[in-house]
Amino acid sequence: MPRIGIIDDGPVWDAFRKALRDLGYAEGQTIAFEYRATDGKPDRLDQAATELAAVPVDLIATFGTPASKAAQRATATIPIVMVSIGDPIGSGLVANTARPGGNLTGNTILGAEMAAKRVQLLKELLPNAARVAFLRNPGNESHALILEELRTAAARAGVEVVAVDARTAQEFDPAFAGMMEHRPDALMATNDPLQQLNMEKIIPFLTSQRVPGFFQARENVLAGGLVSYGASLPELFRRAAGYAHRILTGTKPADLPVEQPMIFELVVNMKTAKAIGLAIPDAILLRADEIIE
View 1 (cartoon, helix red, strand yellow):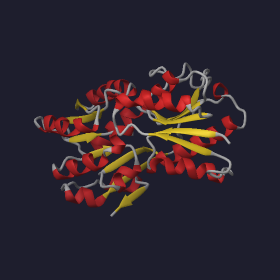
View 2 (cartoon, one colour):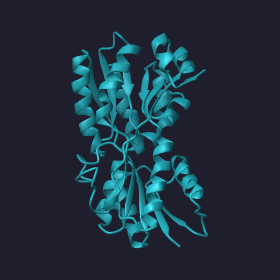
View 3 (tube, one colour):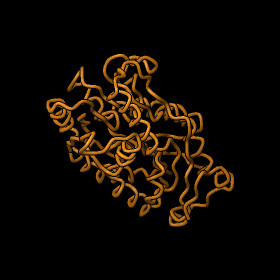
């Protein structure tokens, strides 16, 4: 029975498991899962990946760059399927997205490449915006390039970008306190797993301070964020299950190109807009794929 190792299980992995069931796998009968948790502590990633490699599992599935890098350090032979990577080449995960080589493949969320579009959306919603905060996980190597591209795009629009750093769950509160000393006109977050695990801190804080929050995942807007623009996170996990299936049935990771998302969603939460006193322009509402009342 093939075994798949997963670091930091959670609801976000449900789409991955469901897609495997749709492909004919039955947990406990034709497939098994091994889980290791880090509890949001980055120093535990290497331990979790090393333990999975020692089981050994037949495949490791990872969400985000930090977990993927830990798995890469843990094994050069066990296949690794990455989900939602911001910069797979810049992070050193693969040498080439078309021909990954090695034992890693998967999909990317398109991080830095989306900077200009997100700045454009920011200026449409907040024409007078002069300063935006970028919530960054310094432990996520892709965030360095995202921040660089975001600053370049924002400078052309006359907007200053301020990095707000949180490497662990305990660092969000002091990071936000420091941020509010130089109140930004908005905050941009990412799909970084640490941020996704701590949305119950991020979203209520932004709402209470009436700071518009720009996210990448629809799920964050359903949870009370203002607006999101990006690829569907559940779809990325479903696509990753297809990669896992192909690898478990004999295809080498090196022969599977790293996939980029093709469809992007614009989601707006009107309830949150009213709560923070923001009027959403009709032009954005007309383009929105989903409006939450």
